[in-house]
Amino acid sequence: MTVFFQRLRTIFVVFISLFFGLVVSQQTWAFSKVTHELVCEMAYQQLTAEARQRLDALFEKSELQQTFPQACAWADDIRRQDEFKHTSAWHYINVPRSAKEVLPKHCASRGCVTESILTMRVRLQNQPEQDWQALLFLSHLLVDLHQPLHVSYADDRGGNKTKVTANKQSTNLHRLWDGMFNVKTLSEQDRQQFKMDSVSVYHNEYSQPVLLFEQDVFIWGTESLQKTRSIYQQLQHSHSYSKQALAMQSDWMRARLLVAAARLTHELETVFSSSSMQLTNRSKVNIDDKNTITSATESPSMWSTFKQWLSEF
Image: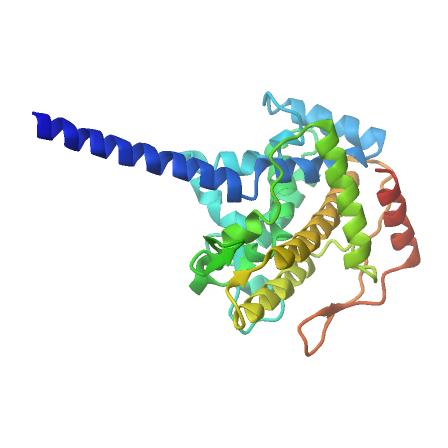
């Protein structure tokens, strides 16, 4: 009996260790609820009063005991429920290693993030007073599409199979980018600091306007893919990220999330405001030999609108 209980105790200790190790890992590395909340909060704050009122009325139908920004992680929360297991594929898209742009043909038969955004956009436009699930899926998946490793390669499981070292700690590439910066708390000071930092690094990262109000999800995906290609190219030299390298990539990610927030504002304003501005930019994206997106056709009115959007934080 003594040996039995010793073994039982050993199994229990191992289980507890694994459990808490998993919990810590998820809290540290997941593209966290807080990240989704902050992006949705930035978008929500910039809506017109009419759009915000109509969004609030729709969100109340969810009966979730949360605010809309907090509920922007709902699409992650429900993925393991039987009713929603099929939605796991909606959070990413895989492309061939040779791809330089994201195209509709890259979407898998079980779905992908670009197709799901388009579906949720139509659902929400068709039922802006009823389809609260479309609201939460759209708000969540739009942010996911702006994370580079959510546009990646199937043979590497979106970076999950590639081992890297960051600040002398081992992880994998996807976890590293999902947790590019840790935002663990949500005090008012934290929120304001995040926004100010994001606005600051945006100006440093984007010397030229990007297609901020473009509604083509494949352009959004192509932007993320170009970053993904750059990340994998850098791995040819090293699988280790220094503190300085992490800081640089964190700045890029903050700026990227600010772009996501601006685009989400536009999506929601288009649905919920009767006088929403039509800002869609129909310019083409050019991809040069260095796999970077270039576009000099962003209209001045769009750019000034976004500058005003930034100044209101």
